[in-house]
Length: 307
Image 1 (cartoon, rainbow, N blue to C red):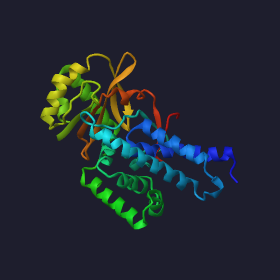
Image 2: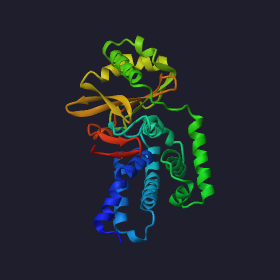
Image 3: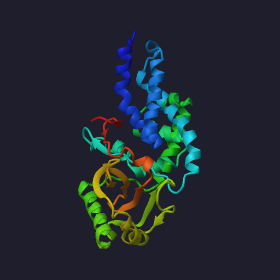
Image 4: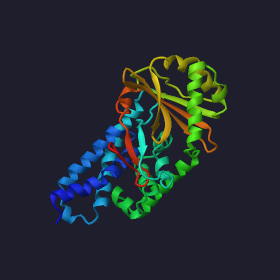
């Protein structure tokens, strides 16, 4: 029979992985941690001796809590002012990032926005099977559907995801080159270097949540984006210090003023290394914890606040 300390230890061994799953489901670290805490409370009240597979049990409970939270989040996102962008995280990496490339790519802002196109159950099935490697029998149990239905959910999700251009993590030198060009455009107003690094169909979106100044429409095309950065955005970056940091596994920027992050910029890359998305997060509610780094384990997909 599992004692209290053993039961707690069993949960803690899964906490980071559950948090990584919940964040990818919800796009919010605060909501993800709430889902994991609710899972822990359920685990404490469960008869651990009767649970044959604790990992599957915990994954099922956490997944269903995320599905509940997605239902309540849907209306908020429909009514959201302007573009909705997932909460950015400052990430450091433990282990070998190259061996866990798929899990690292699934943490990017661009990938998380792809998940928004899927129904909640499609999202869950895709993440559980395609990203975290759970067998369809476990996915079916987690979603309370037949194994055939679980396969269908994952297949539909995969079609939606692969129809879109793939999201890539280019070499560090490519990412650094873009950040340098972006900062140079903000400083000098010249986009000569930046223009060559943007895809022709690049999209620029800004998330202020109605709480601060932000574009409410998506800019598309390199001409529009270059003009906006050189003529307007540079005026918004005059106060504060631009600090380079890893944001969702990608080299990004945080604008810090009076000790607080007021803006985060995260790029999304195309297969050829050009930038096809520029995400600007200005909603203060999403930036409160950006200065607190999280450790991402690319082998398991886990996220934890203490490295």
